Image (cartoon, rainbow, N blue to C red; front, side, top):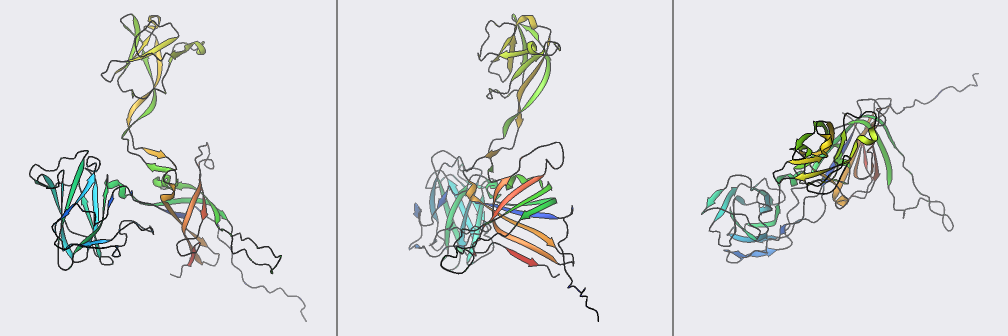
Length: 427
C-alpha cells in the first residue's frame, strides 16, 4: 500500500511582462462651454407659430462618454429663418458653429452677419449628419469659403447675428447652438499607448467594518477606490495628455535659450554687439561672458544693468538697448572692443504652447486598459472606465530606469457603479 500522496491539481501562473506588452490610456476632455445659445433665445423668426419643447433634447454627438447634460430643448419652427445673436465675432471668425436639427431636415443654410437684417453676410449651405436618436448634427466651418451676400460679413467686437434656415418636411426644428473659436477645440479624444512595461503594481484592498455589534463584514460604507502604478519606458508622443495639469495654449511665438560667440565692435565710443532675433519682451535669461579669459572666470562674467539706454559703463557691466526696429544692441565698455564675448539670450522661436494649470482638471476623463496572461494561454483584458491620474513622473536621468514613465492612477466607480471589467478573450 502506497501511503504517499504526491498527486497535485494542475495550476496556472501569471506570465511575466515583456517588451511587447502595452498599456492603453484613453483621455477625453470636455468641449469648451463658453458660447451656447438655447434654441428659443432667438432675436427674430419668420415662423408663424414656433414652439419650444424643453423636454426634446438631442443626445451629445460631439463628445465620447460625457454624461453631463450639455444640450437643451428643441425649437420647432417649420424650418423658417430664425436669427440668433452672439458676442465678440472677432474671436470666432475662424471658428465653428454647431447645432442639432430634427431628422427630417435635409439641408441647412446659415448666414453670419454683423447686422440683424443680414444685408452683408457670409452664407454657408450644409448637409446635416446621420440621424442619431431623432437628431442630426450640423457643423459650420467658418474657415471655408462662404457665399457672400452684399459685401460679406466683417467680424467685429460687437454683436454677430446667425440666421438659420432649414429645409425639410414635418415639424422641423433645431436645438443647442454652440460656437467655438477653433476647430482644434474638437481635439477632445486621445489614445495613449505605453510599451516596454516593467510593472503594473497594485492590489484590491478592502476595509473590514468594526464588529462591536455585528459579525465581521466588509465596510460597505467606505468611500472606496483602488490605486495602481504603471511603469513603462516607451510611449506614444501624445503621452503628455495623461498629465491632468497640461492643456493646450494659444501662443504661436515663444523663445529658446541659445548661446553664441560674437566679437565686440566699436560703436560711438562703446563696444557693441547686435542681436537680430532676440525676443525683446522677455527680460530674463540674458548673460554675457568674455570668452578669452580662461584663468579669471569670475571676472570674465559681466553683469547687466537694467537701464534701457546708453550710459557710461565700466568694464564689468553692459546694458541692452532697443532702437525700435526689432534689433537689440548690447553696449559694453570701450576697453572690450575687439574681444570675443559669449552671449546667452532668449531667441525668438515658433512654438506650440502648453499650459500647466489645475483650472480644468475635473474636465478630464481617463480610462485604462491592459492585458494579463496566464501560463496556460488564457488572456484577460482589464478595462477601467474611470481613473484619476494622481501622479505623473517628470524625471530625467542618465539611465533608462530614471527616464521611465511612471503613472499612478486611482480607480473609481464609473457611471454604472462598477470599478472595472475583466474580459477573458476567447477568440
